[in-house]
Every structure is written in structure tokens, then in C-alpha cells.
Image (spheres, rainbow, N blue to C red):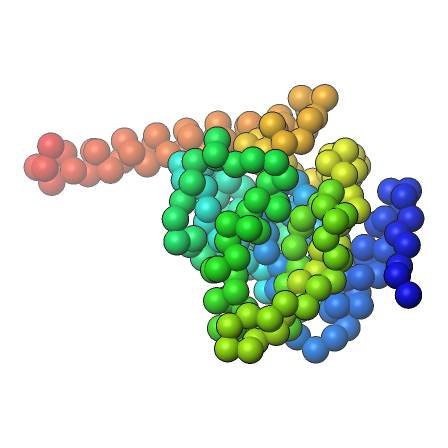
Length: 224
């Protein structure tokens, strides 16, 4: 019997929480691929609501974009906010953000598959949660076969969510938002970005201070 997913946002959330609960009730380990996007932030928020402790799900981020320090500072912010350790891996190649196309989470998944499949085998993962959204052509739950006969269940809880849904939920739940995704998520209010912009300004100030301290030390040592 094929499940028919309801259209309303409230029902989408209920079905998503049921799906997450169903996955986490099964034998693990389970993992979540966190891209840093608003959709992945909201999904991590929902995962946190459904687990007893942060060790129930391994959270991975694969470095894919070059020259985006604000994204990696954002990851540190999420670690502090949600209490998860984000395990960092590096993609075999890095791209400029300007090269990305379409749905960021779908693009991110496609370009980090090789790394994540290696991680799945290394950690013997049973399931991998993904933040793809607006991709109803794909199944919410799909078992895939990796090399050496290893099987992995891929879960897309936000499959039926549109960008507008995610944007609204980010606002309602007052979740942090990484500014580099502004082009993907149309936000009318500037209020959502004030905290992030302030965060980046402070970080840049700290960076300049650190640079000055390093230069001062080098001068004292006679290198400059």
C-alpha cells in the first residue's frame, strides 16, 4: 500500500516526526548528513526533539565549498546550540559556491556521495537521514546497495516540503540561518539575518585581532 502524504504543513511535520521516530527505534547506528542549509538545520532540530541523547545519531558534514568561512563558523554555532558533535569530512574536491545549482541539499548530496558511502561502510551505518526537500519524485525511504555488498537505508523526511515551508519553519522556531543560502531561500524580512551578520562581523573583528597579535609576536622575535 502506497502512503499518501497530506498537504498541510502541520501534517507534514507530524508525518516527518513519525518517520524519524520509526527510524530511530530501529537498530543503529544512524547518521545525518548536515549540509548547513536551512533545511538541514530544521531537520536537525526535529531529530533533536525525537532522541534521548545526542549520541543516538551521528552528524556528519562533508566540506564541499571553498572560501566560505562563514559556513564553517556557522557549523560551530550549531554545535553549541544543539549539543551535537558534527564530524567533519573533506570532499575529494572543493567547489565555488557560485557553481551550485538548484536545490542545495540535493546538489550537496550528489557531490558528496562517495565520501558518505565510505563513511557508511566505515561506521557500519544502518540508515542515513538526508535534508533533500521538494524532491517528491524520490522515495522517502530507499535501501541502496554499496560496494562490498553493504546495504544502507536512505531517509528523506523533508521530501514533501517546499522551500517556502522550510523558510516559514525557520522563522517560527527562531532557528539560526547561514547567510550564504540567501539566494536559495527567499526571505522577505531582514530580521532573520541580523544575528548572523552580527556573528560574522564579530568573527572578522576577532580574526583581525588575532592577525595583529601574530604580527606583533613575529616582530618581537625578529622575523619582521
